[in-house]
Image (cartoon, rainbow, N blue to C red; front, side, top):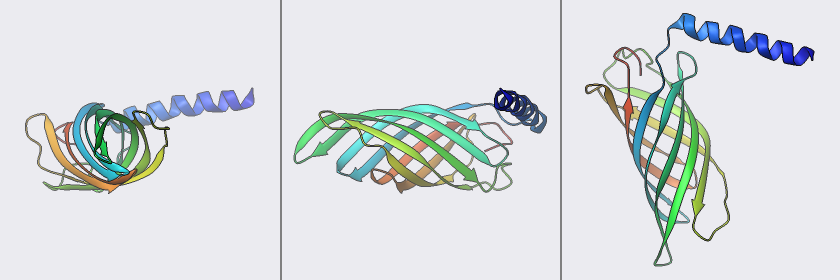
Length: 157
């Protein structure tokens, strides 16, 4: 019971701290990824990027597409949960850089589901309207390259 009270107290004070920091709201992100692992995969996806403090952004994305292996195309998809540490959270530079990691769970038609640890590097470009473009490279189920468009606030990455 005491643990439950402590957890509730931490949740309440954590929420107050986030509000006090006036962090940006969660924003949609859209992506196209190429993954070269156990086959060649091309997928399009969407999800949410959420602040978890001043420097950390958590992205939860789902994607669907095709994986080519041994000359045969298979329907595929994946769910990613990736936390990124951004080096310029307040847009003080026109180009932003972030490093992150998390978990990728690919699903390929007719195969067993295998989650992978994932590491990524992002380079974000200048904000255009309400959107910020980014290129993401990393490892997780193979080498991956992605093009991402994220909704964004004017003063936050």
